[in-house]
Image (cartoon, rainbow, N blue to C red):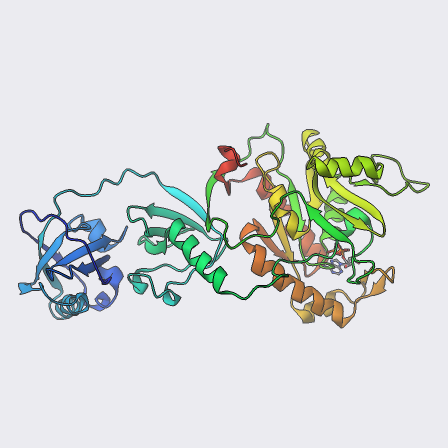
Length: 462
Ligand SMILES: Nc1ncnc2c1ncn2[C@@H]1O[C@H](COP(=O)(O)OP(=O)(O)OP(=O)(O)O)[C@@H](O)[C@H]1O
């Protein structure tokens, strides 16, 4: 039982007496009864505010939202505070094990004709830190990226949901989309203005420009992505509707997008995956405005184009991401990725976080794998014989600062983009990581996955 402060008065009908036999040890939990109650402030009458999906009251089918509670074990509850009613219920269930409610059922029960809805949480939520929740104990916390099954949307403000994989039969309260948006808006306005709030990537991956990024104001490359608002905004929808999707063997493969902090090894992993089986995996050939070198062939290392054509392609939104490095433009087009997918191979790309929105589309159906660095000590041990390439040095040994920088970048990426990751792997031992990656890629192609509903039922926006 749990008690929100106020309530409307529903129309009463004939009183009924319902009894429940309970086990005393569970009596202190609101899940025990699985309802919340409220008091009509004018009449002092006590009503069932909501019945928690899967809770005891719901399973018994005896109590419904809007029912008026008159007595608990012969004890009249009119005029009492909801908290006092709860104490009475808890007291009786501890001492006697049996609780008898006398209720006046609501005349018109709300019709539950909604279909089951699954969503991916795009924000974190903790009922314990939400003073507005009608009952914190009945609330359900979630982290961004969690898949939630919405089981009841009758209340416009507070929905009932279960977290998947389903390890509990009883639902919890979560804020509705509108309510959570309102909370996010209020939070957003209460924050000081931060011009650099989005992750500022210094360039784009080595695989595209074949030279490692390094922060330096004069040579710092700029990076752009296809989506106009590439930074995930707090004002976007807090829940994304998802559906279970399994690729049909005749469909093109899902794009595999690897992402991680600079130097963590996404390019190495991508390269090894393709090398392991070039008949199955392939990268997308990027475009560049730089001149071809002696051994290079157009369409193999790069597609070489003039700046004018490149600009035109940017204007026509043909790039997933593009950027400038040392005076030359580089970019990966959607067509280049599609060409690999249409050839029947699995396209593997490494992307900057800002390109996430551009690959999460109906046509590419990207499966995003986040490559996380291992703890500092393991980084030191595993990267002893490895080299990084910077703007100043080609292949110099890793330094402590590189590892710290990698950890810091990982923290920022995770805090901003975790909800978009379909799979997270730690790049510790390289051999193990390759096996892990291969397994994840196979799963992405052959097993059912949660994907945005808009990919399957395309809307005007997708
Ligand atoms: N698990 C690992 N153990 C040891 N060395 C690794 C491991 N993973 C990657 N490396 C090495 O670390 C170096 C950096 O890797 P890589 O170039 O793939 O980084 P990256 O994530 O693509 O970053 P960037 O795109 O900025 O170059 C390479 O020399 C690579 O061989």
